[in-house]
Each structure stands twice: as C-alpha cells, then as structure tokens.
Image (cartoon, rainbow, N blue to C red; front, side):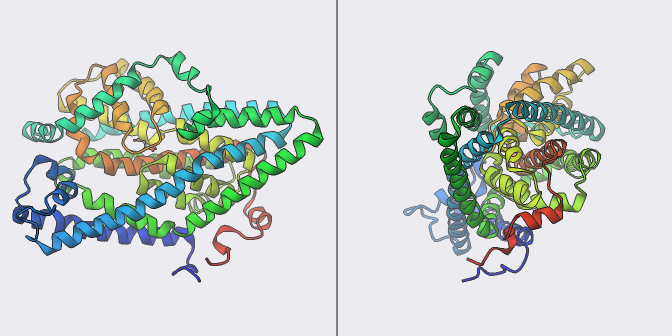
Length: 482
Ligand code: ASP
C-alpha cells in the first residue's frame, strides 16, 4: 500500500505537513483560548502563556463549565490526539538514536584502520564547531545592538510578562544550578563512561561516541580472522537501523503535522505580539546564519551549492523545527547527510552525533540576542569586555546545552550571570521561548550538516551528486512504497 502523496519528494511532503499543521494549530489555538476563556471561566495567568494546557484541566468531569463550549472540547481532543501521534514518533526517533551512533561508529572506526585519520577528523570537527559558534554569537550580538529590541520596551509590559511567568522562570533558573556547579575538568571527565551500558541506557550521546570509538579501535587491534566477522556484524546492524530510519522518514510528514499542531495550539499569541521586535531580531540573526553564513562557508570550502545543500538536508531541518530537539532529529540528520548530501559514513557517524551534542550555533546566537535584549530592557549598558565575555560564556554554555527542547534558556542563566545581568529577564522572554527554540534548533542541525560537508570534502570523502545516485541502488525517495 502506498502512503498518500508518496510520489511527491520527501521534503515537499514534510513541508506540506508543516504548513497544514500550522493552520490547524492556529485554528485550535484560537478556538481553544480566546473564544472560550470567558465561557470556561479560565483566567489564571498560566492560560495567557499556555492557553491549551490549563483549558484542558478546566474540562475535567465535574467542572461546571464542562459542556460550556463544544468547540473548546473538540479542539482539546484534537490537540491531545496530535500530541499522542507526535510523541509516538519522537519515541521512535529516540529509540534508534543510541543504536545508530554506536553501530555506525564501531563499523566505521573498525574498518578505518587509520587512527591518525580519526584524530584529524576529530580535530577539524571540533575546531570548526567552536569557530562557527563564536561567529554565531557575534552575529546575535550585532543584530541586537543594531535592532535595539529592548531599548523602548515598556516597563509595565516587562512587569506584566515577568509576573506571568515568574514561577516557570524560577524552575529554569534552578535547573541552571547543577550546570553552573560543574568545573571544566568535570565536564571533560564526564565524557568517559564508567559503565557503557548506563551511558547507552541514559542516552548520553557523547559517552556513546566514546564507547563506539573505543570498541571500533579495539577491533582494529584484533587478528583479521577475528575482526572480520565483528565488522560484518556492526555493518549489518547499521544497515538494520538505517532501514528503521527510512521507515520513520516515511511517516515524518504526518508526524511533523502533529508535532506542529501541538506547539502552535499552545502558543500564547498575545505574548508573541508584545515581544515581536525581540523575536524578529532572533529570527533575523538565525536567518543570516542559515541562509548566508553556512552557504558562504560551503561555497568557500566545498563544491556543494545552495540548492543541493538545502534539498538534501531539509527533512532534518523541518523535523528539528517541529520537534525542537536536535538530539531526537539526529538519526534523520545522519540519513540526510549520508544518503542525500553524499558525506561518507566515517565522517557522518562521527561529525553528526558530536555536533548534535556540542554544536549549537542557533542556541548561541539566541543567547547573544537575549542577553543584549535584557541589558537594554533594564537599562544596563554592556561594554565591549562584557560582550566578549558573552561570546566566551555562550560558546561554552552552548556546548553544555543538552540537545532537547528548552535547555537553551536554562544555559542563558549562566550567560546572564557572567556579566551581572538580572535573571528576572528570563521570566520576560520565557513566553516566546518555544517558538524561538524551534527556529534555533533548525539552525543547530543545519550547522552540523554544513560542518559534515566541509570535513568530508577536506578528507576527499564527499560524493558528487552523480556518485550519490550511483552508490545507492535505491535512493531515499525511490524506495518501494510502504
Ligand atoms: N532545543 C535545542 C536543541 O535541541 C537546544 C536549545 O536551544 O534549547 O538543539
């Protein structure tokens, strides 16, 4: 049985899912909040930010307003059904994240037989990641200094927004405490797992990368007759996991629809309006990074053109946008980079998992804008030294940011503290964090893909488009219909 629309290219199907999801989400958001708040008697400040969640609670049996508004009930059910589908899909992605990293790394390293090459790839990858992150924050700082989104921000709005999200902001500030307590030595020490099974069970990607490198390296030290069946096993398992990713990608358009419906349904449109200039500054900076800086770097360092790059990686970008998690998107990013962009398996299996964990250009850029916005709003000028401190702390903070939704704002606490900015600012911008998280996660993933292409080309491991078509007997979009 062919899935509907299978003839249309995958990235278009995902884009259609996204567009339809936004429309459905807006319908649910409006019918569920504005039209029904009054009728349902819901007026807690939580509702202003997350209209949907609180409204669902007011529909519990026994509530006098239970049948107050049929539209609200239908909207609440539609939201819940979509949340279910979206979560199911996310579980599928998380399910394969650890196996894909482990199997493909072991297979790659074991068949490499060249440990110097591994060190070279590692050095280049981390060096480029650090440079692009520092560049991203600089763009964020420039954008915020030019647009000045916090300069004329009305004080009463600031107080209103801060009081609405104070409780939620306190939770974010609290979770930053554990991160802040970590010394750089401890962060490096934590790369090395005590128990490989625990690392895998807890999905600690960087530790799994270390396990994969170690096991792969150890296989290269074995006699050939012992190593060959092991390499075949890990290569076989990699193919199995890739098959699962391909099946998951088939349902990605529907999943993206569901993920986005839930996000938009919960969005506080009113909060968005009052922070519009701030949001536009973040989104503008992210757009410069994604559509100018990355293509420029690709043009300088690789033969990959604009169209080829975005066509190859758009499924991963769109999924990152809908899920706000570069960690969950990772299996799809790997598939796009290897099968559609033509990066070798060796480079993909190292650069993408490491990038998903430590390379967060979008998050760093966002932190730069947010810090300047808060400084402007509280009328606290930032000196050049302060701004350089932000570049340094935000680069380090973005490395420590977990690749899951909403962690960028937790790490912002550390950036604000480094230059003595008031943490109350977190509460003001929290209401629009999710929408900005969606945008910055897409940039995070795009940055990983760009670096994979640059590293692969420098190692002569980037296929030309004709070679990609020839190397895969059945390219992604031409698989037999499910
Ligand atoms: N959601 C982002 C990611 O997964 C991290 C963040 O900025 O919150 O890449």
